[in-house]
Length: 196
Image (cartoon, rainbow, N blue to C red; front, side, top):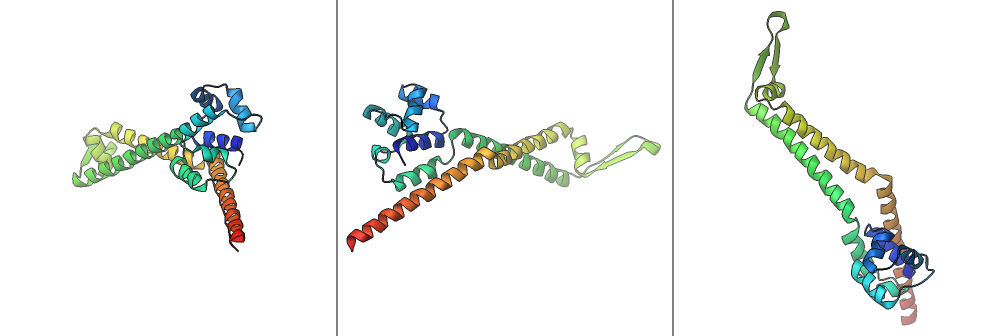
């Protein structure tokens, strides 16, 4: 990987736009674009800032030999952007609240069995189980709020895992790891040749 490709990869992996990285490094967006395209290279002061922002060594940025240990550490810790992690946590939390809420209502309706009679004569309606419990305790609104909360959480989680961008980014990361491993295998093969 070239220096520009590494900057591009680190920026995207951390969920930053060129503008956001430019603000942190105190350069223009066009400068970041030129660095990523290989049209120019950052001065040493900017390299130090970039290494600090992305928590990588300057050796990793400058050397052509892949620092796979640093790469793997970066991917393991930063595989998802902070925005994606927040979205996933919120979705998981809402789904969990919804599921637990429905289970609690269901258990309460079993522990406190209720029958409710409405109407008279031919229009007599008998409610039992969960429906009766919700009506007697006037908890229908809270129950449906809980169901809606869980549904929203499940939607967020499924949308995250099945969105095209997430799949594309996951494939890019897997491809990068495969390429890095091939590079390491080549280096080991070269070392073996030198030792013979």
